Every structure is written in structure tokens, then in C-alpha cells.
Length: 394
Image (tube, rainbow, N blue to C red):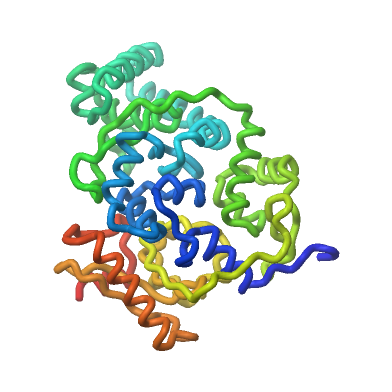
């Protein structure tokens, strides 16, 4: 590509180490700093959020308390629907950007789908649903946080059921509360609240979403893409389209709006934020990391060969493309880890290239670091992978 600077694998890994807050010198003090640096943390599995934060804190001892504080007390972080109809944790200040850039189109489809399914099943109409919605939001505001069952005590119509896809082999019975709260989440009206159990629990309460003004969609997309490129660039157009879930025309419009600069990558043309095409510094010391399943670094790009060898994927990913717990050495995935029933953190190297005594010692140190703050809490990834299941079985 004429005139565009070439950025090779070594520099991409160096950028990843520092900007993803993984190298020792790049670690930070608070969960807010972690989320701010990464833009978004995968929130589908609640444990992922805490484990991703702990891996990037200079002192992870307070990971559980500090992440809970940020999510449920200060509300400086929020767990909500975002890109690709997936649940993420974002800095609260980005809720308007995320909602306007990615949520509005999905929300319209979700509400239309709910109304269509209800109409097909002979359930009440849109006016009825609007009444239930307003009553539910008012009840949630009064309670602060609540489960669907608790909200149904205040608004009994949430217990109404209707048959989905009658006569089909996937026919099922849906409860209004389940579908409506999902729609309200995508619409940016409610967010995930405090879990019912420990920090690893998938059961949660709902809370009213932080107030945010509607943003122009194109402006919001440009801001989100600019933030992500600053954290994760360079990236290809395919990476950007995959991460955002947008149409390619929207990606290109946002790239133009922020003045993104093209660079040359092994995969072809990539892009960095304006002014970011120059050489990037390297970490001061070699580094290792144990990252959780669905970690935003491991899942950050669609094209991953520069940090994850293709032959490792069958053992580190599930059948739906979700990455499991990974072991990193100097910017590349070299293996995976798991927790055994007794609580021990165990790991295995799958790619031995460059893995000597120093690497093994650093990886073991990270395993001890992780074990130190996780303690007796049992971690089982929501999406289990072949290697994780094998290691966990002991």
C-alpha cells in the first residue's frame, strides 16, 4: 500500500501490551481505569468482568470490592447491552454514545419482534404493553433495584404468558417480563444491577439506566470508533465491522469522520486513530497474563492470527466462537488455564515456541497472583472450552 506505514506483528503486540494494560508497567489502580482503557468489557459472563479487571490492576487484592463499588454503588461503570446485541460493561459516561451508536437500530427490531410474537399468539396489544412498561419502570424507580419476580409483585401483568412460534419445532412459552425487560435493556432504559449471589452469579437484579441524552447516530458512531481505535488500533475494516456490528457503510463513514489513518498490516490495509501511525514504544520487561474467557483483548479483533495461532483455536474456543481462559506471553496466546474443584489455578502451554524458564516462572507468578485474590471462590466459565474442561477435571 503506497505511502502507508507498515506495522508488523511485534509492534502490534507491543501496542496490545501497553494499551490493553497487560504489561506490568501499564497496569492501573482502579476498575474505572481498566474500563476506560479498553472501552468495553464483555459482561455476558459476570465473572469475566472481575477477572478482566483483576488481571490489569497493579494490586488486585481489592478487585471484588472495588469492581462491585464501581458497578453498584458509585455507578461509574454500567452493565448494559451494546455492540452486536451483547452485554458489556462500559464507563457510565459512554452510555449515551453506546446507545445512540449501536442500540437504537437493534432496539427497534427487538420491540417490533416482541409485538409481532404477541400478536401472533393473540396476546394483548402495543397499548397494553406500553402501560405495563411504564408501570414497570415506575416500580423499578421506587425499588432502586429489583428482580423480575419482585417487579411482578408490583405489576402483575408481567406474569402474563404467550406462546412463541406455535406449531413449530421450537415452540415455547414466553413470559412478558422476560421479553419486555430484554427490550427495555436494549433500548437503554434498564441495566443489569447487583447479582443475587456472589460476584460470579449469573442471576441479577435490574436497575433504571443512567440518564443520558440522545446523540446523533453518526456522531456517536464516530466517537465510539475513535475511542476503540485509540485502544486497539491498528485494525482492519473487517475487525471494525465485526466489533461494532455495524454495516460497512457506517464503519467507513465513521473512519472518515475521525480522520483515521491507513496503515499496512500483514492482513492488508488497517487503520489507526489520527496521529497514531508513528512507531509505538515496547514494554520495559517481558510479561505474562492469565485472562478470562471472553476477555476483551482475546476477543478484540476478528482477525487474530497475529496474537493467536490458528492451530490453538479448537482447544481454546467453544463451538460458537467464544474464547475460554487464555495464557499470554509477550503479546501472544500460548495456552489456557482453569480452576480445579479444590480451587487450584492450573495452566497448560500449547505453543512452546519461546517458552523457557523465564516464561514459565512469569506465568506461574500470574497464576499465584490470580489465586491470591480469587481465594476460595469457584470460577466456572459460562462458555466452556475443551482445554478448560480438561484442566478443570484435574
